[in-house]
Length: 484
Image (cartoon, rainbow, N blue to C red; front, side):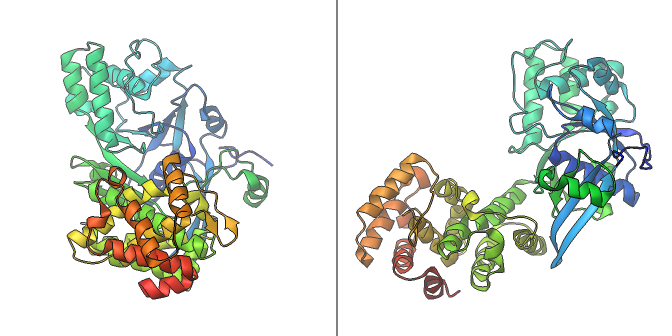
């Protein structure tokens, strides 16, 4: 079979409008797919130049296929199992700046270039005070970007209209603000010209973003079968889920340049990204944390089995819609749509998501992902969140380390493992004993940053739920305490 390339695929050439730092699976299955879709829908006409941020990488592999690769999207969509295969053809050029530094800096002179997009891992946006020689390839991503922007500033003589739209996708809070701060700090450290520093901070626009799509990556276990199906060899295939979401916060005007919504894509341009971060943490991450101990102690091992189970699926849905959604300040129709998409993701038949893979560090995860929902329900909404609190009781029982006769491979901070081991060794199986154990856990002020026993009704409910779980099958306990 032939390798995928322009030899067997008719690729349209486009002007490079996007400089992309990163050639990994996520950017190719997310950003480049979005660019491809906009191009196909006729709302955008631009190509991507891929810059390899590290000395090692895959730009040579991508170049050997003329930037062509197959994206395989699969999951649940509108209640149906969906699998889509598409050749992505928007990658136009490839640079390894460690061996092609002059070519890299030459791109700074481009009149077509409008965007810089990056995903250089969470550690990529970091200040490195030793990155001081811009005459050779800088080590850090901010160093490389600073050198590029200085070359652009010099070529266009400081023209304020030649700044770029800079859109980082690294998974850190306020990634755009952070990148801007690091660049300005590095420029100041290097004693760069004040006019350039002003141009760096004001002529360029930096956007905070939230990205969401699960990307398993290269289908290593089935690549040969896929090549047979496709009819060509593709060493750069990538698998992703159907769901996608890109939230971009920042100054007005970007949507006109990057009109993804006109292509039917879930790309949101917002004034404040905070509620969208909160939505993801509380609904997606929070429901994961909430369901794990309940479902696992009920004898279930995966997320999909949980959501397809009538009783446990009902528990998860009621937690999301009755307890989480009312705490988030986003229009209700958007909240309902996002929540339903999360439930579809949980039912993805192409992914086996083990509950035990989510259970790592559950005590801290409960604090960050679920506890804010508990507190806001009780203090602000005057609503008692039985599902979230039943999950907390189940979590305490989970940390007993037993599912029937089977040992649970607990993974957490040693101080929590030691604490629960001690509490359960001293446990007396009476309502009073349950209350004693629960009161001690709820009273961990250093961890919870408050005494949860002071929240009205919480100690009584969690203690009675724990006693119920210990002495009855989980499914009975769910009926008796939550009504599921």
